[in-house]
Structure formats: C-alpha cells, structure tokens
Image 1 (cartoon, one colour):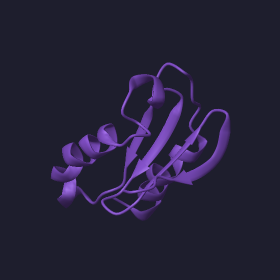
Image 2 (spheres, rainbow, N blue to C red):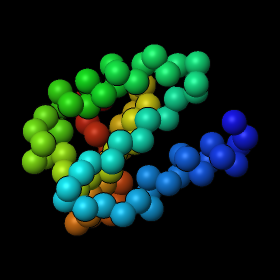
Image 3 (tube, one colour):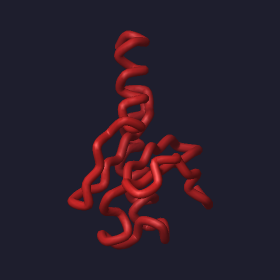
Amino acid sequence: MSPAKRCKRLCFWLGAELTSRYCLVCITLPDSQAGQIPELLRRLLRHPEFRTRAARLGKAVRLTPTQAFWYERENLVPQVLDDW
C-alpha cells in the first residue's frame, strides 16, 4: 500500500460524518498484524466507555495495539481512551 493511501485511510476517521445510528471503528495496523483485529475489537467492546450499544452510538474510534482515541458528534475533539 502506498504511503498516500495509508495516510488517507488513517486520517479519514477525523472527518467521518457521525450519526447516532452507528459507531465507526478505524483499526490502524500493518497487513501483517491483521490477526490482531478480533482481539482489539473485543478489548474495545469490554471497555466501560464502549460496553453498551447506547454508549457506542455516535462515536468514532481509532485503535492501535497501544493506543485508542475517540470522538463523538457532540464533541469533535479526539479523546484518549483511558486504560487501553
């Protein structure tokens, strides 16, 4: 994948249009680590901030193995997900 495509994929989450109908999750990993995706999603869904459907709706999340950031429709400033 070219660096331009990678950056476009990485940066899109900040400009995504959010609605209260879904939660957008962007996982940033090299293709060689794609096997980590299920575990990262499980970690997110077990986190108190995202445990329930109601808590997740209207948010965008960017995950890596070591960091997680999120923002919501009402506050477009990315927040660090504590205890990641």
